[in-house]
Amino acid sequence: MEKVSLEFASENVLEHGVMAPVGKSPWGPSTVATVDADGRRIVFTKLWTGGNASYLCIDAETGQTEQIYPDASGVGAYRILLTPDNIVYDTMGDQMVAIDVPSRTMRALGEIPSGMALSFVRAGDGTVYAGIYPSATLVSYNPTTDIYTNHGALDEASWPQYLRPLAIDASGWIYGGIAIEKTQVVGMNLATGEKKRFISEEKRRRGDPTVYLGKDGQVYAQADGWGWHVMFEGNAMPIDTPPVEAVADGTDIFPDGSLLASIDIPDRELFVQDVGAEESREVRFDYESTGVRLYTMIAGADGNIHGATGIPLRVWRFDPDTGAHWNRGLGGYGGHINQFARQGDVLYGAVYSTGTLLEYDPSKPYDDAPMWESKNPRQVHYADEARDLYGRPSAVLAHSDGRHILVGGSAARVLKGSGLLIYDIETEVGTLLDRSQLIPDQGITALVSLSDDDVLIGTSTRPPTGGGEGTAKTAMIYRLNLKTHTVTGRWPFEPATPAIRDMVVAPDGLVYGLAEPNRLFVFDPLQGEILSDEPITGYGAASGYQAPRCMIVGPDDNIYALFREAVVRIDPGTRAHTAIARPPVQITSGIAICNNRLYFGCISRLFSCAIDV
Image (cartoon, rainbow, N blue to C red; front, side, top):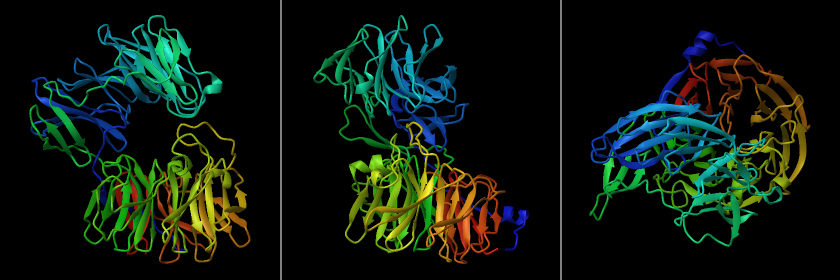
């Protein structure tokens, strides 16, 4: 194969821009109704725009905005806290921070361990406490004394600790719930520093405990296997059910009693219901965004490139002929479609964190509604158990039989291994295989069709988010018969690799794949043998995000692969390889070919390169 010069590879790159210049607020409460220094109503919200965060002040009358940019990078805490003195607390980078809303100023208060706050609570003396992930560390700041304190970890574990939520009782004890691998309820005496754990080891379960301050002033806590308790003076007293609800935070009420009825950050609109008004009024606003991450892309039957972003989920379309593009949401859903696969003219996408399978026909009108109501994209399969089987979908396959869609991945949280969805387009029936029917301790990262009855599956040994390390030593490929639902062969990799990134079936019938970090392997499905497994160097590690689609067979029968630093052409016969494009930034997602151009993503931006070079 003729080598492509480094100079040409650098020039053979065309940028098409940001596909979804939007943002969203974090998962926890992060939008508050308040006033500025002049008493004007404003909406203050923390804004996630891809991998960074900022703060947006929106005038509730005019929609005029002011965007505040922190010095630290990253997304920071998953929620904020507004105190009565109009100060917002957050964590950004390695600092707990305070933003004075009237003056729009921000200052660092003290260093936190690595991670971010998942919970905040304010004590009666004004001290603000924050629960830090993943170490379950408690930190605090007293604005009266200007003293910041690290109180240490409230629990010790080898897995990530989600310290949320927090509540303080009348006796001066603070309590918190710890999720997810093993639930725990913890407490600390704010005066003495005494710490306690309340759930005995035999009663700990996987899940999310509940801790809240009730309207009666008591703190209530609950966890599966432990039951409900009222917490006071560092003791847990069992009860049947709490007699009262939690104290409402009231962050949607302006000081004058008017209501922030709703806010749609991606579509840049909010609604305010003024005091005495029967209906809310619309307020349009704007903000700057570097764009949210591209998760998947595919060439459609209509000649366009279709894809999806994450956090928030936006489905986008790019017209290669005109350069025009648009993006739409799914009823404000904040997750992501990890991968689209195309069966005929229709696209199928798997959604984090429910594992929901969507059917999307680009030729029909788009319906921006919640996915369980939307007509296009249309929810075609949902199962409660999918969240723990493939709630983080890493592989979606349109089977070569033209009839089935397969979805695998890992649990959304904690549980190791993956189940598999086999969805029949004709009958609209989905069959779920449990992890016990596959390789119980390995996730699924790649799928290819071998015949009408068989698929080849690539795995990962990495634990899901929030989970501890597993026992599997290396990833593997294994063969699954779709009729009998049995594993008929398995081939572990030696030397070990943590994951298979992607696989394709070449015209010669052999399976070519990439194993981490940058190993090109060739598998003969007829002989059941790995023919070759060797590093492919000079291009960085294999690319791809949560569904790492980084390989594709081109119209010229060559294989094209995405690495962090280059688009690489591979000759299936000789396995010779050369870079045909080297973009100025790292490649993070892909992969689609349309009209002899290969499309890929660099974080939020879409790029392409010619393949007929």
